[in-house]
Image (tube, rainbow, N blue to C red):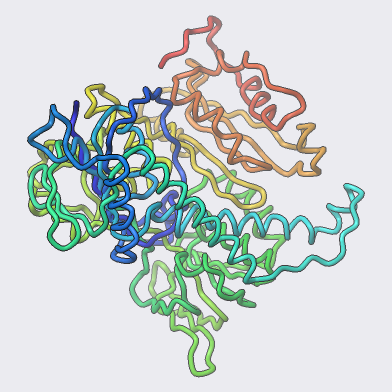
Length: 565
């Protein structure tokens, strides 16, 4: 029986997504994102403990859960083969990454514990992907009902649509609570021990949680997540100047809100606020909006998601100072030129949302006790998520997954990394292909992507001396999209014509977030275009957008090669 200790200190934070270029290079902006690798599980439901350390709030809730887990599944003593350790695996942080690792550890027969200092589910469930999708579901319905031309085209007559702000906020809160309870129940049902308190490393294979509770584990996973990044000069009061943590509560809908940063978080909130009646002003440090997207997708997104709506923007500027509204005065924002640093303009708005990305939550983890130094706050790891110390050497039995290592700040990436680590500690080598992890932005319509953008692919091709080709298909040619009167959209494939290798796929259109997985799974499994073009898709479905995309690619390889795994 392998021993594994998983410790998770997940801070109060939001979404998992790509880095926002309007913020510090140490920060990443986005919601929940990457996908878990395709792994086969063998159910071995033995005793497990999961330790998560998200924040310093609501500790009593998790003490109760830990006690209940210990009393109901008898997970209080180590397995006979690991008598020198309390646990096989201890996970610090019970966010999506820690949770995914814990469940897979149970499947592998590891006695597991998870340490949580805040609430089960971490950023994604409580302050990110989950509640944001509830708000976006409302914005999608509102946007559709308000589009009189769209409704008439379908033969539907609708009176003026309205909304109840508190009921909308309750919907988001209730969804988060439901998912959080589901995650907690899944851990306790499988015998994972939930330990409450802030977790830290006190030495090799030794962890402290709460005030003075000490446990040992054969292996330890750090899964502490990230927190919203707030640049200097910005004063957050949680009311009129907010981060995504506050905005998800939807305590009020401002008439005019400035959103600092035009990455995933900013773009999704602009969708919510404009659907609910707000005017939005984007403030972006780079010279173009949505700098993290493929340029062609960004251009189309601006035409579809920005220009027709009550949105204006300032690019190439920093918000050097933001003062909350008080004493009858509005929120004041000072904009300076990103290059010259000269004052360009002062804005007066009702509210400001700081969507400049996320920073790793790694302070107080006791990394110095194992000679580990963070890099801009991130825990250094190799491609197998093994922690690297200050001398460049691997720290035995210590791993770090998710936002805390900065490789790909998406919730599903954290989970995939956690599963990969469990595979390794169970004796099977596994390396996650991060280029096969998809990401999505849940605007209306949605945006999704996997792999390289066209500029990135061109750079790689130049360096490695090969050619790339690009294929595109439009949603306007798809029967199902036209039936929905949602023909606005584009799918783009970047590939190697000499081998059929898929380098990247980018989609903007109806249900793009669901469609991307055919491409991401193909990349993960090493499937070539000359093979996947023979796949059959039901008609009429949106999946035929991808079918046509792959069929339109011109590959210079005649023979069909076996799928490479």
